[in-house]
Length: 371
Length: 177
Image (cartoon, each protein chain N blue to C red):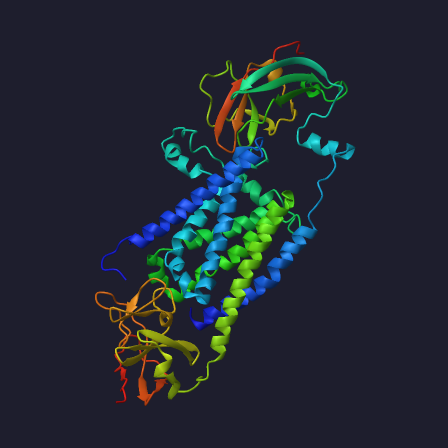
């Protein structure tokens, strides 16, 4: 939804969001290292830094995975959602630094055949810092060093972390709207749902790795509480959505079906119903009623949870806009969503179950006020 | 989300709810105790180049500075007169840092050169002989290759993880065979 191509469309809210995000990450890293150094002055700081970055990534994936279900449970969390992708990329970078340190910063020197300065970029990640297999390449020894694949407790937890990192890389690399537009929203969304698999792998990585050697009850409790929190909110939100989908009464019908009364819908807001398996947002505005697909073309966000702003239906996720009577974005934008025929019988709203093609103009039903 | 994705989401999280707490509990229950070091561990220590022999005779010793840390080098006679054909087979180089070297995957090489270089070689030359690996501050025992007794050369401490040469030093001098 842009006039000219820009790599990142910065806006004040995005800058504020990113500043808070990076500030919080920096504070966490500093706090982790400072507290550890104060509690155990003999601790090797290189190892502490590796744990700081790893735990920061693990905490951040909990935050990221919390935002979606919290937004579904309470619209107050929508502001956290609109720039979640930057949070995801930050999490991937933290995980990468945990694995490989700052070695990638040395590449320009290496390409020039020179030695990189040791400070401040001489920080090795877990891949090389804990490598103990002579002159074997650390990545090779990671893959062949532990072959206890048939044992649960001795399973090479590093492999779980590596697989999660590959998934996170794919997500970070395709996080830009360029990929969203070219892969199409359903494919892109499905690809990015693989973060759930990455989370499962990371829990395995932590349980079979850090928790095996660090038996501090605080660490065990923190991992357990994080796990229970994520599972609970996803189950609660998922169950709520499943219940709404089960209320679909209009499957295999091509007729107008009653979806409720005008009084059910606040002005400039919508009521969402499930028709023929998909959700439809029925908007009330300027004494008119229009119905659109509930699925935003950008990231498949819930249009019916947005509101009418500047005469346009505005997606609550990222602010994409559509005219309520035709489902098209205002010029010069080109996004379109399907529309539905609507009619009123007194106060009762009827919607045709078969959608029109995306962008088809439909005459809104006019609310006639009784004298 | 569209309906198919909502269904995927629901079933993925149902599956994870069954799987992840099981992994967590099994991981806690199966957590191994720290094994106690006893005589049966000697073989493992020997494989990892730890010095476990207490009857060896010291032939030469010197403390050198490696990146600001004192490291004691020693040539030991293992007293294995019937072992091997070469004199060097009975000798061992032991390396004992006073504190861990703060480098990733530190390897010790023998480099056959006339003099100890002022500018350290990066990467390690093809004629360098890998003696073993150094980590922590336990005493490590490395083989003495025949060239170390008959030809000039120096020991090179090289961080394989970071790809940097740390220090170079000559062998300790003493009554070597």
